[in-house]
Image (cartoon, rainbow, N blue to C red; front, side, top):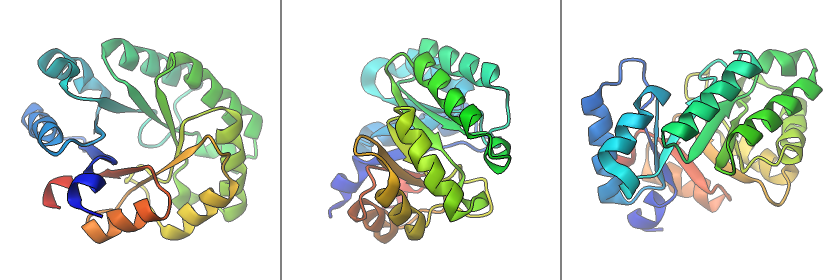
Length: 212
């Protein structure tokens, strides 16, 4: 798989707390140069990116990030504002506490509420797999499918570990046919990116695209 084919599947990412506008501009310029799938950026930069680059760039952002325990109403508001500001893709973090409490109806309802707030834009659901049992991961595959999200995503990159091939294989077995997979967290090398794409992922979240 050549570099250009890999980059078409990359969400070129900068989500550190101290990310500056200079960092964001560099990210966006690289995304245009490399023809990445999107830039994945903090919500506070969406409007400025949209005003600066217009339709030259596909903007992805994060909701309830990185811990996921914001109330649903706050996440819905974040999603609506992000779409209004110019985002085309939303990566939301589930409430992991609800999963641990086995309050799966609440998890489903929240994803559905954010799905509605996205107004037809792409929705990716971050389950933060590092904190979950296989049983919980399988249940979330079912919930993400039922909620009609576009993607299930492994990680925020801020947890105890990121993407693993084992999780991707588990997702692949249990998600619905309309749900795609995004691997993120700790993916740096061309070999890693190619491996996840060959395993069936449609997107790769990484800050390492420029090093390919």
